[in-house]
Image (tube, rainbow, N blue to C red; front, side, top):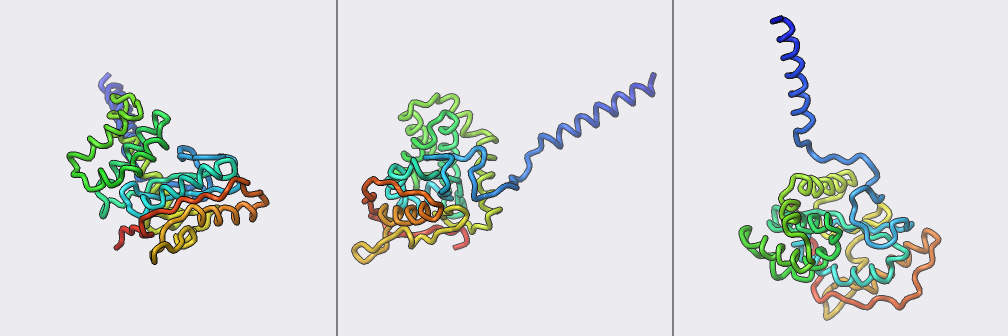
Length: 249
C-alpha cells in the first residue's frame, strides 16, 4: 500500500512541476514574418491591402507625437488601399510613462477602443508625458472614462500580465525584424523608411508632412500595381520639428 502511495505522490508531483513549467512566464518570442500583419495587431484600414505600413512607436516620444496628425490624415485618405499597423515600442529608459500609456491603449483595445485611446494619448501627450508615476494613471483613467469604457474591466486589464505580455510581444517582433530601439520607426512592406521621406522644410526646420507621406504611399501603391486614391492630397503638417527617440542615446 505504501508503495502505491509513493507512486501516486510521485505522479502528482510530476504533474505539479509540469504545471509550474507551463505557467511560468516566458520571454516573448516571435517566429513569423515581421513585415506582415499578425494576430493581435492593431490595424487601421484595409487588412487585405498589398501595402502594409507598420509604425513602431512610443506614446511618450515627441517625434511620434509630431508624426501623429500628418499620419492620421494620411490614414483617412488611404484606408481603403493601405493597412496601417501600430506596434508598441516603449523606450522605458528615457520615457518612464511609455509602457503605462501602451498598457492603457491595449486595455482600451480589449474593449474595441484602441484607436480612440491611441488618438487621445497623442492629442494630449503634453498633459501626461511628464506626469509622475503616481499621477499618470489619473490621466489615463480620465481618457478611459471619456471613451465610455467599463472601468472595472479597464483597471483589471491595464494591470494584467496578458497586457504586459502583449507589449513585450511587439518588441519581440521588432527584434525579429532587426530594428533598433528608435521611435518613430516606420516599415512599409518590410523596408524601413527614413523619417526624412515623410518630412519637408518649414520655417527652416524639418517637419512631418501628410503630403510627403502621401507621396511615399502613392509610390508604394504603384509599385504593387495599385492605383492611388483619387482624393486630394492630405495637407496637414506638424508644427514640431522631426526628432527620433533612441533608447541607446
